[in-house]
Length: 293
Image (cartoon, rainbow, N blue to C red; front, side, top):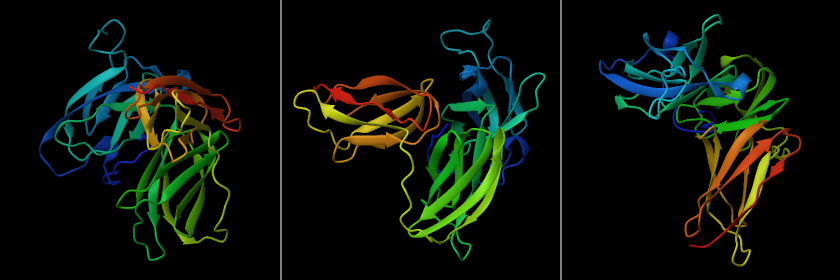
């Protein structure tokens, strides 16, 4: 979420993982790398934190130990249990925080984890009227700082990252059916439970606010660039990817924060731009004029 991936939007494995991220019957172990960030301190990496997955722990790198290949706040766990989907991070003098991630731990070397402390996550399931899981339902968490969205997985589960603490409304929709629930979000994992879809009394609700949007055009003739991927990153971590539409337009729905946008259209020289969203109610426009190769 995951950060977002907001995304994303790979499959969330068993939500029944044990305390600290245990789970899975496979006897093999895995290698997990990552970095721990502090969302309350401009996403600065955290030194000396203990990271535990399924009873196996490591301590994040401090500045005295850091090197070109060993970043501040990074960790390596060799022997993490297969199937784990949660991790517990402990900082001296503060309560432990449990963070969910997706996809679940697999054998061998796993993709690096970006773990954010002091920010919320919301997870749950989207079910139809018969209680069966709904795949690819659109899930939105509306907060006083903006909207954060994602999709349900094949088992109906969802995980929305980077949710500010406070009162939120969670909405899920698929076709003409919706479900809503109110939730007070705290740091770490917040369980939304099951969202049971019902016929939508308002089948044409207003669209969610596009907090960062823009257009990709050719610097040669200002023509729109369709189908081009635009990446949303924070601190070098990819959060979300969208493709431009036929008019060359793209958008993201994200909370306030400092981001980086990267446009990588085929046949054009890529470009990267900063994007600082101070208030989601004042959307940010970031356009790209790209030079053909």
